[in-house]
Image 1 (tube, rainbow, N blue to C red):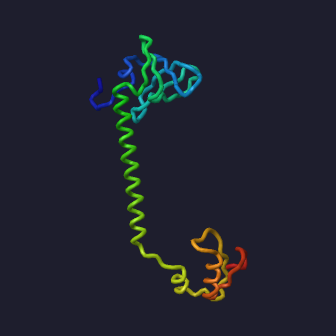
Image 2: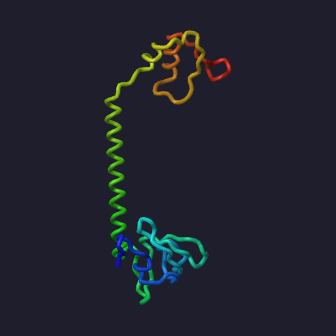
Image 3: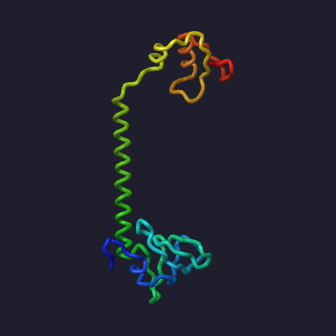
Length: 167
């Protein structure tokens, strides 16, 4: 039933014609069953994009929604083999992405460990800050008192706040 590109239309999946309404029910809603007019499968193929006949707005019928069949049986969307396959592909892709993200974080940590950092003292020793008025603001990796005493030991004048007098 899949077309030559490996995709199935919603009309092939549900064996309906365009414009037909189907009855669905969201298990997480108290509003009960509703009729929707399917427009197509979502891009990832795991839900149905449809027009809600009650209000005319677009709804996504997800895998856990019940679909009422013409013989009054109900089946969850995820139970259709095509949808089930697409959900498995989606979950597999998500898992691969999460694993790749975890690997990238680990690689970054290893690179940080291997990187050499200059200390604040080393940086301040390379520039002249004699009589430079500075204010210490923001979040610091060490206590403000240590930063203040380090700056003052290099000749800076540490102000209490940023003003027109600070450099």
